[in-house]
Length: 244
Image 1 (spheres, rainbow, N blue to C red):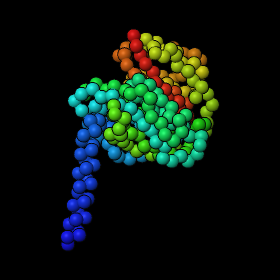
Image 2 (image 1 turned 180 degrees about the vertical axis):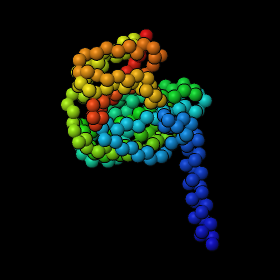
Image 3 (image 1 turned 90 degrees about the vertical axis):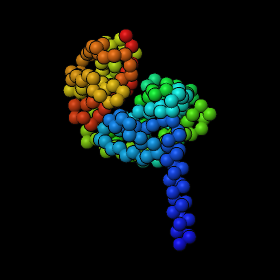
Image 4 (image 1 turned 135 degrees about the vertical axis):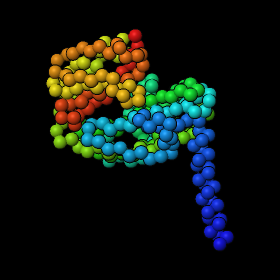
């Protein structure tokens, strides 16, 4: 009986330690469509059939003071070496794949008290080949200590049809005053622009020619544009800054 009580006490101690860690890290991982719901320490599984599978998250500063933070990405598994990955925040999109299995952001990102940043991991499979990968993302504090993490499992099914040209599409200027031009996008594809929480603020069909669009009614900030092929199987997503 004493042994059973001891085992239970140990389990409760471990659980309380995990809960305390999540409460004292000062940050909260949350899904863009589930504000206020903490995902700290969880494993999130995503699947899709396009060239890129991405997770729309926010990292919220709940510490009560400004924080200088760094991102760390650890590659746990990869189904094939052609898969790459990307991580975007409010300021920049990073390509950790160039660093191999382990990557740490060189310069810290400052998040104001009660502020937040986009935290958007993405797996990229070239030419719609499909594949799967698992990455662990850590947050490090000003002392370069790991204070929190999430794990993301990506799965992408190979596209039946690979439409050439979507990945070569260009959107410029970037940053923009709201006037953008789309070039080299195949006819029948579409462009979709979302804000930092994943809300669609603009969408239009593309005719294969160079086209210009007016996004100036949207407030200054960081957005993401996606150009999607006519069959929906091929996409490219990149960051867009509007600064008037």
